Image (cartoon, rainbow, N blue to C red; front, side, top):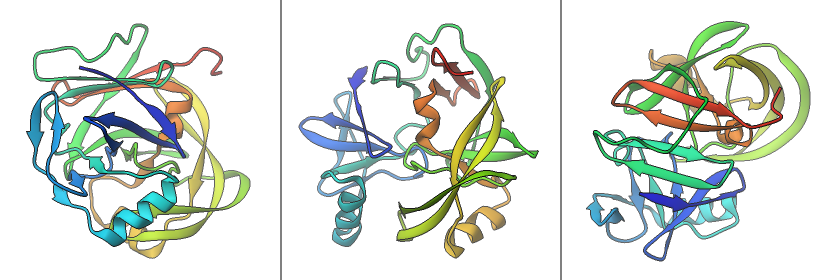
Length: 228
């Protein structure tokens, strides 16, 4: 199943049956303003999206979002996010997601229902790959200050955060990503869950096509041309 998408304020947004859907691999659950979410002709259970959260999300993304597609709908599928051509490829078990040639594969595992990979930023540690997060939240030496930005997390709401660049080694390359200072609620989650210590945000999609194969336990990265 191939679906065109747009990057909207750092979020992967696409249409399903006339509804605007945000892809969020950092959410263990799917949410909807009304009813279920239909994917490939199959209705998926969705938790109701509270009105206040829907309003804050719309404000943050600067667009109406009708549903959030979370990992409960994706964990049994293979998904390729081909950002170079703005295309999602979703396949079920036994099928191949996308046509990512020339990729580098690194181990992927699910923890608390979320996709976790390892990066190196001063030391190696596990992070969640979160397409719902334009900003990363990473440990490691800060390279360059970028000022402050607003961010938004389900269960936390909107907040302001200091942002710096952090050098991150992943899939054979070292890249510089924008990393925020987590608010206390997010810091508590990252420090206390025992499964991951940071968030790798969607800025990676500006540099690479990626695929999540939870069946094979692989995170596939194909760097865009020109990425050093």
